[in-house]
Amino acid sequence: MTHAGPNRRQFLAGAGAVGTTLVAARGVTAAQRTNAGPLRANALDEVRFGLIGVGERGFDHVRSLIMLDGVRIVALADLYDDVLEKSASEVESTRGYRPDLINGDEHAYRRLLDRDDIDAVIISTPWSWHVPMAVETMKSGKHAFVEVPAAQTVEGCWALVDTSEATGKHCMMLENCCYGRSELMVLNMVRRGLLGELTHGEGAYIHELRFQMKDMDRHTGSWRTPWHTRRDGNLYPTHGLGSVAQYMNINRGDRFDYLTSVSSPALGRAAYAAEIFPAGHPRRQAHFIAGDMNTTLIKTVMGRSIMVQHDTTTTRPYSRLNLIQGTKGAFASFPDRIALAGAEDEHADWDTDMAPWQARFDHPLWTGTADLAAQHGGHGGMDLVMMWRIVACLRAGEALDQSVYDAAAWSAIGPLSAESVANRSNSVDIPDFTRGGWETAKPLDVVGV
Image (tube, rainbow, N blue to C red; front, side, top):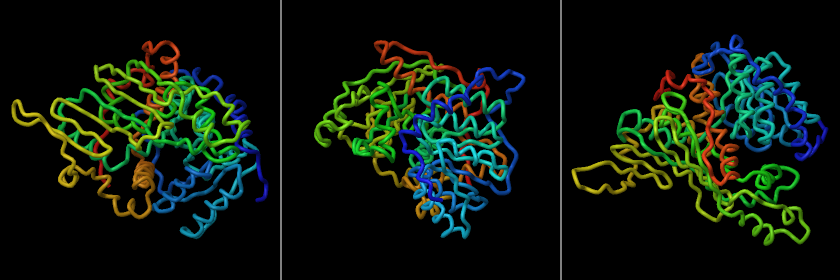
């Protein structure tokens, strides 16, 4: 295939047209809805995947999928021939066949959705396309697996929920950080009562990414950078929040109730642009409004508190915080450490030697896939573990670890934080995307391989 396709700016511009797929999403009737949590679809002997977007994150998913049994990659869609060929060659060299390649204009991915030989679609595209592509995927009779965040508006969150309920198809956000070794271990600790009754958690995405501003026509920075000129709030809430939400049984016994959010001044990106780019460059002319640090506080219906932070601008070491505390102790990451209640009047100290704790509490899902993850998994192995688990659930007809309600609730923190920041940090209600289902839904199990 030789068609060069439009650039990423054209790709983003097309998102408005794709938005017509959301028409009447909130009009799904009660009679049309099915219970999407926990949704159990028909078991699949082999999971046939299509992937939309394989330029960067999508290529990581290709590399994970080809390591797993019971998987076939049927088709790939992207705007660029070079990334399609790279992924196809990766599949061919490992599995001995070539997937079909689809490109053209920004709607060429619909040719992938029109096929009847695909069970599930992985969507790794710019954020504005996540909701329309996921909605179309489910309406085409396929399960949707969408990169983070799943939606950029509350309306988009509802569209995902309503469509999943109406079609009976999975819609899972690919929050890989829920499958890190530490996060899975803490989930096991919490389920076994080590930290007592949970009271507070903290999550973050602190990761200096200003170098992405150099991407102008292609790659992540070409479409991600402009978000810093559009929204002042938490632009990327789910990496730190997802695991804390699972510890606290959010949407499974508790739910987010309301939030308040505050942002620091937006200084770092303009300073970087002035240092790196020549006079007159578009990045120097951009008006960045997203605060360098956003801090959002969430209150749950059961009274717990959660702090979520976002900073992809400041020169500061990477952290997702991953802190959870209860009546018997606390755990925090970056670096991993734990403190448990001791004798009366004894002050707890952080224990940073994780080996004994890992021996006792490593999650069986991690230990069961550790060798494969170490050899082939990105981000410390969490990518491979996540894909292994997804495929295992689809093949067994089991509920997924993350429901469409999780995708909606975790992603909604983004637009709602911006609403709070714009209104002097006044509190903003967080919708109950489960429509009351959280009260009876069972907590996420600690499962093995």
